[in-house]
Length: 255
Length: 255
DNA sequence: CGTGATTTTGATTGGGGTCAAACGAGGTGG
DNA sequence: CCACCTCGTTTGACCCCAATCAAAATCACG
Image 1 (tube, rainbow over the protein chains, first blue to last red):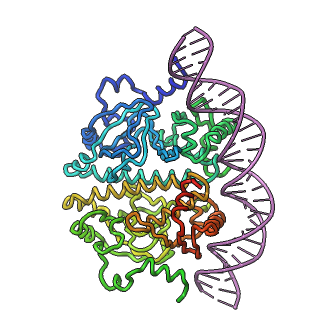
Image 2: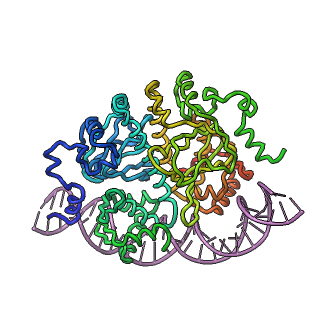
Image 3: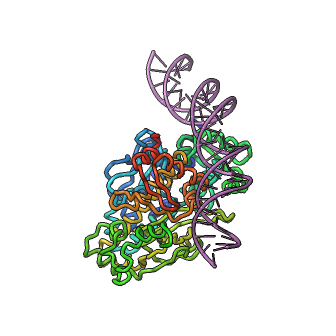
């Protein structure tokens, strides 16, 4: 036993480590299938999607999937395991975090029809990605008419999520934004509207601050303020939401 | 002559009022064609797009195109003339402005595959819209394979723009954000990378503040501070950018 | 011309940024 | 195995920008 955090990380992120290493991974038994490219498609269509996956990519923590200003390759990457940070580095060397992406999210939706990457993408944990070729997806539409509307739906939902995020990070006080961020993480990692109360936040306080538009000191102060108020239990980068209702009230500004 | 603002509005927004009223409007001679659905398609493909337009809709200032929580109809609306405000009304009655949309922008991209509208859309000026049926667009892909990738490209670019917006409104001080907003407006209304230095901002100071995450008093103060500094000339809702370079330096935080 | 909304200006306050320093964990090399 | 170094985190003190409250001025609209 190395460290409680690492142990938790394994239980959270690698629930079937041995099995998935032995069997070839498939979309059919993917735990985040519904959030991902297959969406609500049935098993048969999902099998079609599965055969469109070019390869599974393993990316260790700290490695970049792509860099800002790099030429775009027409590929999409669905995150099967792990978390990513999408960010820019301004010419003055200031980091601006555009988003965090986790299991079931799709990287590269913002590159269709543009020449160069706007952001860099770095793995915050060890990651497993499912690679799709965008031209192959488009071409597959001729045989399976459900594919392309599914892609449009993914793009549209990404747009909605981005809008929602933009609203989150600019409205209200710092504590409201942080509470909203934690709730968004809990909801996103939970299955079908359920919250996952035990969160692993692999990003630094600086990253969270850059994402929410506040200083890392403020993030730290607020987290411990939440802990003293009995809303959270914090152990380094592991956060347990103790009182989701109170956190929701705080995010909505009803405190 | 009613008011200088209205006169300018007409010259900005209704450049060919009589002609477009007489002749049936077409995408081929649309001034914002390149920003819109046709994109970089040639005249022939653009003609295909033009025939996909269901009807041109006239919407007077102050009218809503759709309301939050309304059931989604599978239609897209390209703005040919005018400007829109996309916003939410929280349950406490607080307005949250998601975005402003202008000529060439497309409304409804965030409704594909979702059940209910997330936001309301209200016309800030008299507007002319080009209505597209989303199912017809998808179906047209069989005959014209360029259509659907074009739609994906639109969605992707909308996503990029939304990300960029989210970065704008959370980074830096209030004056930097406002300067960035003005530059974004100027660039968006200009043709192909050129700025339109004469801007008409039909939204209220309150709207701008809600959009940028600041109080309307702050917007007012900063605008006049910019004017005193020789960056702008302001006449109510008409703003002329006098010193674009200085405004850019301010937005980049080099002041 | 009157009424209400919008815009502007001023005075005051507080939240969060800034600077600084101590603390802790993880990794490296001797 | 331990000393050391580096990076991330935490805590404290101070201060500034923008929110808040208030009110006057201006404009839009009937």
